[in-house]
Length: 124
Image 1: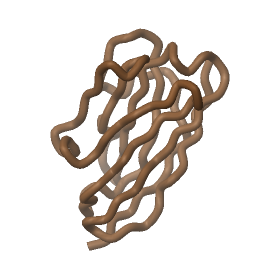
Image 2: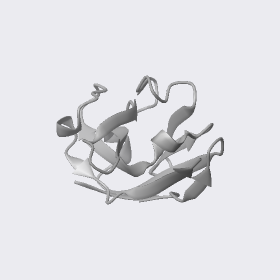
Image 3: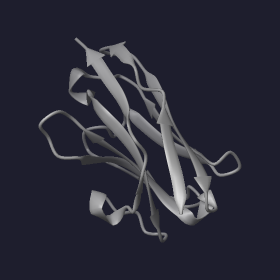
């Protein structure tokens, strides 16, 4: 198993930047494909970005492509999400998630392990 703890969420103005981190502990971090998801009030949890086990592949939701960058440091057991040009519609609780296997998938139920989430609020 792996335990995940997100950090870095805060209130930011539109156009600003944030970097989220997700610290992993437990089983070897590099064995997991990792993803970021978000959930806004009254909405379903949605895919944001994912990265393969050795960071050879990434995938992004269309709404964040070109603005967000996912990365991982397997030596530090940490996943990152760099968010630039933030918009009010990016406001949500952001979760990191892990799944066994090497395939990048975009549906939440394909990820077995979840952090507690970190709040990102973008003011207009």
